[in-house]
Image (cartoon, rainbow, N blue to C red; front, side, top):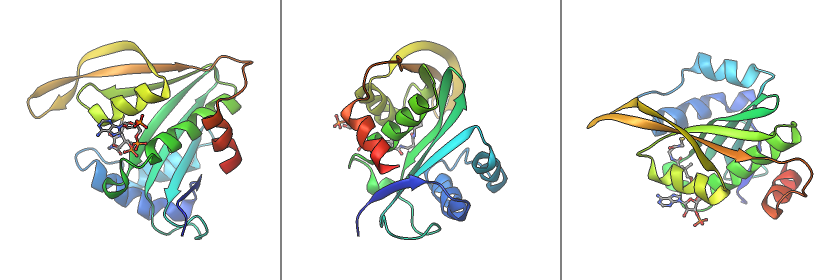
Length: 172
Ligand SMILES: CC(C)(COP(=O)(O)OP(=O)(O)OC[C@H]1O[C@@H](n2cnc3c(N)ncnc32)[C@H](O)[C@@H]1OP(=O)(O)O)[C@@H](O)C(=O)NCCC(=O)NCCS
């Protein structure tokens, strides 16, 4: 079995929703919200699977979603299953969103992240995102309000894609 990534399929929905509930127990998207996400023509979802050859609907190791919004695209969500973290899957999924945003004509990719989410901040830093702005006390935390950081990756037109982006394009 080889770990792989591919576009999300509606048959993945039960596993997507289950992984979401496991990773985000306090604010998981509902099944209805997932249906709407997968059905929207603006959205593009990628999933990581333990067996690249398996048909849609089986085990998932992670997922990531993009909103195509014209010149600016947004990362909707990115999650790797707890047991699969630290092995490069988050970076791989994020690079695929970067490649998809670029392919869709976006000039910038934006995302929002909790200021106390160290693993996510490390991932975004590694991939090249810069801090754009901060929404003070945007989230509720166990010890009080938590800021939200808005991060941005510029996607200038012209230059050849990075090796990571090229690999992501080939994998699509
Ligand atoms: C954030 C998340 C997607 C990262 O996924 P992952 O597969 O573990 O990340 P990767 O293994 O691809 O790591 C990518 C980079 O981030 C860094 N990183 C990842 N987790 C880290 C951690 N816990 N502490 C420090 N750095 C970390 C890695 O060092 C790596 O950099 P490197 O390649 O230069 O070493 C994962 O932790 C997750 O699903 N968290 C819960 C959901 C979440 O918070 N999503 C983001 C919402 S904004």
